[in-house]
View (cartoon, rainbow, N blue to C red):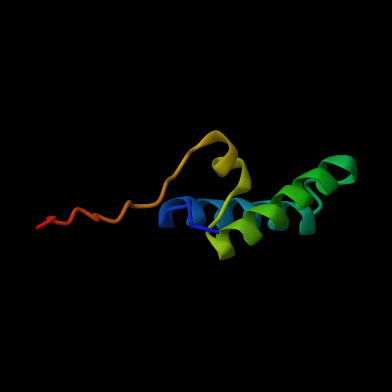
Length: 74
């Protein structure tokens, strides 16, 4: 599994997950919305920790920096 998420993308996902957590624990969101947003938040945190997003892989998106692998061939 190659990483396809950049640092900024990973930080944004964790921040969104934290915001959803705060909204849940303060009682701002509840019911079905809390369950759905909670599940998405868990997915965001897991993908951020691993650095790989399966949806990005399906669509062909990479937000990480590409290593410069140009080599001279003799």
